[in-house]
Image 1: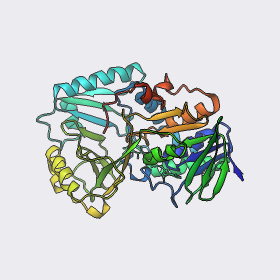
Image 2: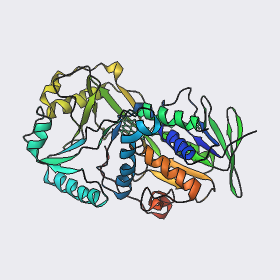
Image 3: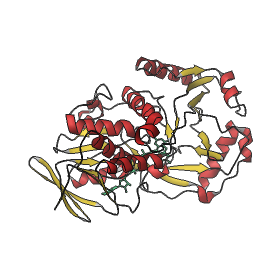
Image 4: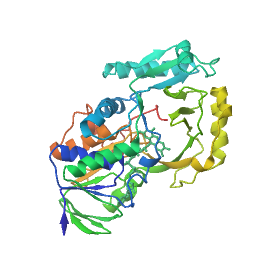
Length: 386
Ligand SMILES: Cc1cc2nc3c(=O)[nH]c(=O)nc-3n(C[C@H](O)[C@H](O)[C@H](O)COP(=O)(O)OP(=O)(O)OC[C@H]3O[C@@H](n4cnc5c(N)ncnc54)[C@H](O)[C@@H]3O)c2cc1C
């Protein structure tokens, strides 16, 4: 029988980061099990690649404060490209309550050491994106170290380096059972045969609840479709602009290749594994795009290039990280609620720390992210969800 020190279920960006952080810390017997023939077929390959520290809660900000500098040095540290572009995130406020909200968040961000985030005036916003309709804009916030990465490259980089450090990746292999006895995890059954291991990491993204169920555990992670629209080449707006978020309706966009990537979270979306792209979504998004940036009425979109993927929603929109009290040796790296790319470096470090040392200093109090918080009713509250 195969043996491993740690089996990671899921070879997306999160599983890959956990594997790299474990092997960097000296743990060599790491096995990543991915059921698809290629990595990235889950949410990682569908992501918008946005990274930001402009959040409303301490754990999310602290995870970004580990992750963004990590991305800035990724190429040098791993010898692999992350595609990090520090073009910033600019939140555009149209109501006094938006400005209050951004100011409150910024006070917390600054208290935790994020010095670069600042409030911006309407004039500064217009100077950044002169094509923006600003008659109702009151101001906003901007952080220049926020930006974008290439999620696929990051996942490949983490995996390549983890494997160079001794980890193993099994593709086209599904974990179909998780074995435990009275003292905890004893192994997993896979479509390639059994593996004996004392530690399992659930890095199964939107499918995390199903993997937890294999160990007899209920994990509150639900899939939710999100759609993205890449435009055809368009040079009516600079490609150096940040991610721009219209707070009046949640429409956001960023430059991508020769065009732009347009996003809007449809409030009518329901829970489920549907990943079909809905063509009527294009009209909804283009209406909002042209409303905020009038020259976007000239954008061309090829519906065949648009896509849908899954957010992995937790009840409080925060990730679920840490060991399960009920099953010794079962660790969660789940429930990112749409922030799994930006938080994958921090997650890898935290999970590796917890497995190897039982504690981590990436966030002040990792217990607040533990799966046990739901049963205790100790939910967090993140409102800066895009
Ligand atoms: C449209 C869209 C836009 C997004 N934009 C952003 C963004 O701008 N910034 C950001 O940070 N995040 C964004 N996200 C979210 C981000 O993509 C996810 O949070 C992140 O990719 C999660 O990574 P993961 O490795 O946990 O999951 P995944 O990439 O889904 O990987 C999980 C893997 O587990 C495998 N698996 C599942 N069950 C099993 C099993 N039983 N055995 C073996 N393998 C199994 C799956 O095949 C899959 O490959 C976006 C998501 C979508 C859909």
